Amino acid sequence: RIWSSLTRIAFAFGNNTAWLGGLSFYENLLTAISLTADAKKHTLLAVIPDSSVYFNSLARRFDEVHNLPPTRIVEKIRRRVAPVLSAKDATAWLSPGSALSRSLRRAKADVAFLKEDPLANFRVPNICWFPDFQYLHMPEMFAPKEMQVYARTALNTARFATRVMLSS
Image (cartoon, rainbow, N blue to C red; front, side, top):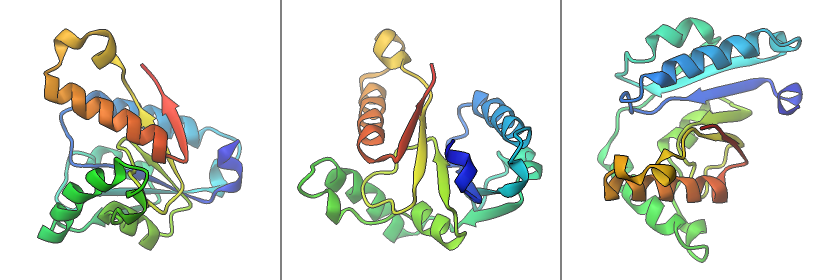
């Protein structure tokens, strides 16, 4: 029962709006959480990109909504460097923290629910959700580059997440 000892549960939403089924998943998950006996003990936080309207339909489900700052050139560089450093155990500790990690700490999140891999040095306990393994079972549906991204995400999720949730 990971929920019983937590008070501030954050749901981090990235800029990927291509997956429309995600809204339904989150709507169902948030409904299920609200129906638990200890739901009143928790504060639900949303952390969304500053300019995103994609997740507005979920906003009513949260006690607090925090916006990620606009992406600056420094964050773009971090996004390029962090996966490279995180790829090797010897250099993972050098990986810079992300804007998402900093935003979650500022929001005082006790745990974050992520759909993306946290990479090294995320510094916030997290539950990472890896929703699909179709890239392994139906490779003909994916471009080689896309398969590499899925494979890297699965590896990093397994290496750096506090807990992993799988569904397919």
